[in-house]
Picture (tube, rainbow, N blue to C red):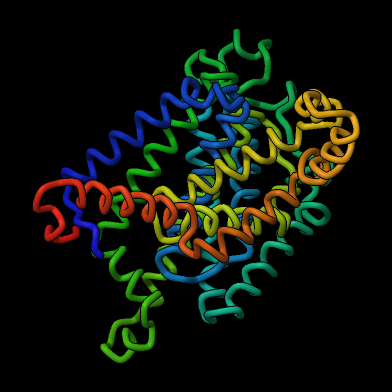
Length: 378
């Protein structure tokens, strides 16, 4: 079954997505996810996963080192704050440029190989970057303490009134904290999503899918896939760098821990959970993981006793003990079980599940409607 696309459908799709993102504080409040800090993470890591999906979902090249670009973007943003001022726009631009150049250098070397060899190369570069940030590049990164904005920094374009104010990113006087910070991240996510949507529908996107489908056949036809894969790698790295900048815009601090292999593995999980190669899948995956991280990890034994207090005493204790293994510090166990179930039963991720539900409703409505049983599927 193929899905028909058109410019009008794409615009409607983007409009619905934009409304859903901008109204998240309202419809996520009933499940305890409507507070600004978590909403910011949804937007930032959704952006990170969207960029990773442009590489992995379209070309099939699996990078285990994308956190390096997240870290480079963070450090670039903080240095922009330190040198230029607390306006987030120059910080975001500097992060995108720096991470793009860094991705160009790494991609030029790593893309000489494919498959697992490419993945190992990207992982090696990310770990080298992580160790350099902790040791050799301490004058630039401030090592394990992390890089932050100080009052003694030049901040050339800050006004005299802003010099004595709080060291918080602000866009023309609006501080990037709370819901203001979320809406700034949300607008950036929407712009990045629109660009990703255009890439998916463009001839460039079709070439990237051809690389994933059969790269050898492309070579036989005389097409060199390397410029396309390198461009996808650089664009993906720029998305990651922009996500790193947003982390610092909402909290002006950059640390080397953002470059660890665990951060690279997390974005892989986000993309696979949501559905690689789809537009919305990585964003759903990012939101799901960050929700588990922030909500499930907050459950403690006292909270569980309150939840299961209606049970008899001889049942309450064992139920709390078993449930406690999957929440609080053990929330990773819940995530692991969920990931295992999705990979086994929904190889296409959450988007495959939504697609199956949609087809189920179409079939039921088709059976009830007159003459619809013979209607062709879209």
